[in-house]
Image (tube, rainbow, N blue to C red; front, side):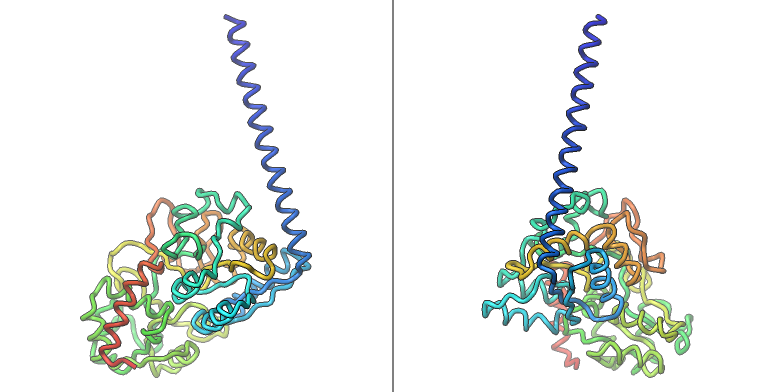
Length: 375
């Protein structure tokens, strides 16, 4: 009996030693791959990225990456997807491959780039095992894909809810507007602006999310009865908020608001968010301008591969969320959003309201809006 026990113990110890050796070899192999990738990327020396405008995005993407990997210069073109993607498509169709990485919203990216086979499967470029660790992400890693193929376009950012817009409380008191139905009050006729609902982006997406709660008839009444003013300029909308010309602004993303807050303006603005505006239809996160795709045939494949791994890593996400004031889907990254209502909570199933399937429904809404003569 003692001999049998001794043999079993020896077997267990041997198995443990083999497991540790395998783990050590795997770690050494990963470290070797990483060092080789960094060296190859530095040899290329440059990386071409387009992404959203704004000083915070540029600081996180350009300054952050260049600081992490000295010797690699990021050539960053600041433009929203609607502005730059037609140019990118024309280039690709002419056999010109100018871009390594694209950062933009789901729409129009998923309707323009996969169709011309411009994007490469993202997973093929990830070598950091920590990035692919499902336990590090709310809903697991694959939950972040926003394209129907679940392979090309990825959102590392999430919110526990969405924001319909903002109200300047210096102009509109809390008791006058505290739920979505209040937007139909006669006193707000001619006092509401919205970003173009026929354009892709967060403005139309949040209006569609409103229709999930209140239906299309409510939206039509709001547009037609309240004489909503449509804008295609976020800066203009925030200036209207400051002046109280249009103290309610729908469809404004957070980055232009943050720029105003940094300047000490609009300190008394409030988000229109939560069940009072969107109802109880489940919590949701939405892919925004932080979505990432990597081009096939990139001019700097190693630098592009390095960026994807860094951007989705804990360090990359921590820097981005801190500077941009947003929330990462990574569980090990502190929230940069001061609003506790936006923070993702453990063990909650979130809905990707900004994925391709949702945007298909959104486009149906836009077709109806066109019939109303909204301009």
